[in-house]
Length: 217
Image (cartoon, rainbow, N blue to C red; front, side):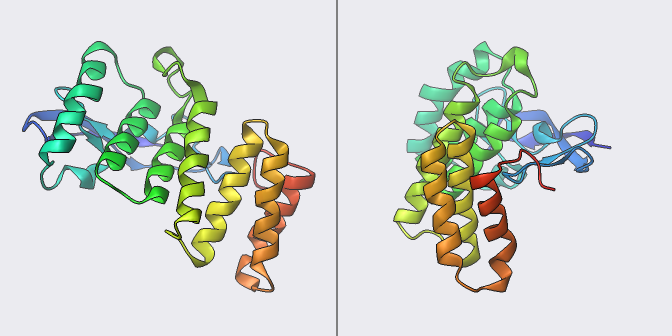
């Protein structure tokens, strides 16, 4: 069972105190997808993992509300996000997208930005009445763009890099680009070598290339 409870946050951008909801516990009784999303039985926990100031739109995980926001980022929030939060009730997916924007404005590394877009893609559809019009495929393509940049710029290494490569392939598969997906699955298989710790990921890449599944077996 997913449990969510209210908590007050102090916005580091505009100093407003606002209430949000924090996930206290969850489960994966609904299974785990082949792009590693854990599906809860009952309500999904996403909205309790990301928080948006309802005055200015600053958005992030709980830890993001420590410290301050520099003037450049504050100005971009005012221009790009504040008008949106005042005109719409933002879904969890949309809030993860806001967090990705802010991470990019702050100069965060590409895999961190891509991970926020992946969370946005996972959460898309939880609240269909308020979802962004761009849709889940748009979010998955943002994941691809930023994860590919992380690989090109050597932002990630070792097993984490292999996981990122697999996830690029999986996002391509989920937006219908099977040839591109296969190329990334092949990279995972080829670059793993004989490392036994990567055997599970290699087996998964082979499966998704030849007999793709939506959930881990």
